[in-house]
Amino acid sequence: MTRAWSNPLRDPRDKRLPRIAGPSSLVIFGVTGDLARKKLMPAIYDLAHRGLLPAGFSLVGFARRDWEHQDFGELVHDSVKEHARTPFKESVWNRLAEGIRFVQGTFDDDDAFDRLAQTVKDLDAERGTGGNTAFYLSIPPSAFPVVTKQLARSGLADASEETWRRVVIEKPFGRDLKSAKELNEIVNDVFPEESVFRIDHYLGKETVQNLLALRFANQLFEPIWNANYVDHVQITMAEDIGLGGRAGYYDGIGAARDVIQNHLLQLLALTAMEEPVSFAPRALRSEKIKVLSATKPLGPLDETTARGQYAGGWQGGMKVPGLLQEDGFSKDSTTETYAAVTLEVQNRRWAGVPFYLRTGKRLGRRVTEIAVVFKRAPHLPFDSTSTEELGQNALVIRVQPDEGITLRFGSKVPGTTMEVRDVTMDFGYGHAFTESSPEAYERLILDVLLGEPSLFPVNEEVELSWEILDPILDHWAKKGAPAAYPPGSWGPPSADEMLERTGRNWRRP
Ligand code: BG6
Image (cartoon, rainbow, N blue to C red):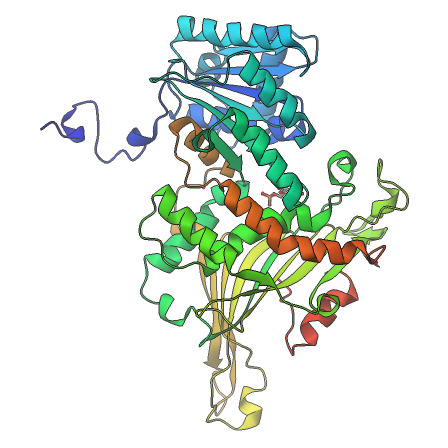
């Protein structure tokens, strides 16, 4: 039997080898958008720089602009120079640039899609892309139906026995359960579910994948990871930026649909799920589906949820506009820029443990973290004054920007008879590893080319997430405008009240 490492060209210590994508091309719709410029094209360059793309890899941009191939090439070049994670190397760029093509057209233009089909075919003949193509829909969901229909009509969606065709969809996957179902039907009409890759870029983050290692590679945490020991869980994704320039996408969508429905519910699923049988896609997804099916909003919603909208004011020494003054937002917009919800995972492991999820724009700091807060010790054999400054033990997974894990526990203050105060023990990626973490989109684009679906939510997960959120959104829809909060703060007063009612407080990371 030939073993993989018997090939003299393969060094068994080189962990990259099994992960190099096979012959393929990638078509991006929406190349002039922010996501393509800041994330997708730089990630493709980073993959090329790391030697993970196949030799004939080709990138096709499709857009309305009246461009030649080299105009698109310049856009990719500039976005790579500005945003790539790895250093710019002329030789890497030149090889990538050889496979860059542009097709001009609108989504309703049959000829343009026929030209795209011809381009994909030509690339296969010239560069050996093996007939394998992924289509990245970095476009508004309203354009999904027409583009998927065009892909079907022009034959671009058709794979043969030996080739594959895949479609990559960016969120939002609908705006509620009903529209998500419609969207899934439209996409599944053209592409079978195993060819659909729904991007939730949080799953591409190293720190998020590390949740699986933390929980399932260690003996230390799992025995206390349940309602017997955990008091509550706080999942926070806070941003200090506002929504200037994003009205088209965000007005009428809001923080809960933008972030809680996808990123935060995926974090909850990974935090709360049972151990999967393996990390095979089906095994992992079935645990996430199980835990999302058990997750419900905890009421009464007036007391257990909060929402707000940032007002104008001063933040970090700068005068910033409120949402209603941002360009493009309707002057009476009721879109929330802060959302907090209380959820309960109704199973034996978690019954009675609230999961508090919050997200917001123009908050005090950019930080994403999962804090598992433990119950107090059942008995403290100290003078009551000795433990006045002792909080609750907590394990905090710092997703970003200061990636790592913190364990908070009580310790004796030196020199006192017995005063106990909180201290922390820290793991930081920067200290523990020399490798820098790949960007989420590097991992996810590579997984699409490899046909590795573990990190992509299936439509059942998307629909379950809407089932959890819909009652809260319906409740808010009846309530009119959300309360204003000052920029640089931690949200509206109702957010603090929602936890104080239960005798708890939000962390101030
Ligand atoms: C996106 C949201 O999914 O995630 C944005 O639509 C948000 O509103 C972004 O700013 C944040 O991503 P990250 O990786 O910077 O936390």
